[in-house]
Structure formats: C-alpha cells, structure tokens
Image (cartoon, rainbow, N blue to C red):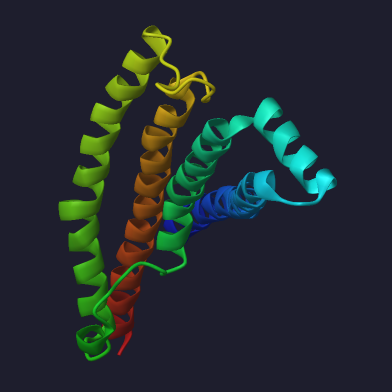
Amino acid sequence: MESLVRFANIIENAITRIGRIAAWAGLALVLVTVFDVITRNFSQSSWDVLRNLSIAQQKSFGSTLLQELEWHLHTVLFLFCLGYAYIKGAHIRIDVFREKFSESTKAWIEIAGIILFLLPFCLLVITFSIDFATSSYLQHEGSASGGGLPNRWIIKATLPAGLILLAISGIAILLKQIAVLAGLVLQQEDS
C-alpha cells in the first residue's frame, strides 16, 4: 500500500508543478486584456502620446490578435489547471451531505465517481479531441479573422493534454482512496 501512495504522491507533485506553471497564464491573460482594452480606448484621446500608442498597438498587434490571444490564454489556464484543482480538492462536492459520511463511505463514493464518471469522460473527450486537433493541424488551420493567430491546432491540442492531466490526477486520487480503504480495513482488523 505504501508504494501505491508513493506513486500517487509522485503523480500529484508533477500535476501540481504543471498547474502552478499554468497558473501564470492568468497573469499573462490579465496583462494582455488590460493592454488591449486600454490601448483600444486611447484612439480617441486628446493626448498625442496616448493616441500614438493606440495607433502603434493596432499596427503591431491589432485587436483581433490580442482578443484571440486572450481566449487562448484562458484555455491554457483552465485546461492545465483542471488536474491541479482536482488534486487540491477544489472541485464541487455536496459538503452538506458528505461531511456526515464515514471515511470509508467517502472513499467509496470518490472511487465510484472516478471509475464511473471521471475516467470515462476523460477518455471520451481525449479520443475526440485528438482527432479535432489532428484535423486542424493537417488543414493548417489558422484564425478565421484577418490578423488573428495562426496554427489553430496548437490551442486545440491543449484540450486532450488538459484532459490527460485530469485523468492522471483522477488515477492518483483513486490510488489514494484505495489506500484509505485498505488502511481502514487494516485498522479494523488490528482492533
């Protein structure tokens, strides 16, 4: 059982590192959004410096590119932090009922949820999203808007990657819940 828990901890540490790195996309998202909104609104400014900044922004980036970059960063933030959030217990539970359950009942519910819902859902989405990203890559898909971001397949590839991380997180939690049940059984046998 200890090796199971050690393996689960290794997985959790890796997912946590990935989640913490991906969380920086939140800061990038805020900076890009603020830059886009502020410089777009400077175009009507009475100050030449601000008006010139807005013109330079439109020539260099354009609002379409920045807005697409915003939703790309949001996608990275969400998908690469899913597994991290699951490991940290940040997903939704009905705590009003859950707090009344015994540790073994909580473990069984978590195991059932992982096996019946989480892993099949992840497998289904991963399967379809790999085709989604591959098709985009083969078509050399870019933004439908002029001045948008090229290589749309990159952002589409984050979907299976994020769900793979979530599935791996689910496996780590599953292993820990099995260890909880085994520990409870061992504790009861010792009594």
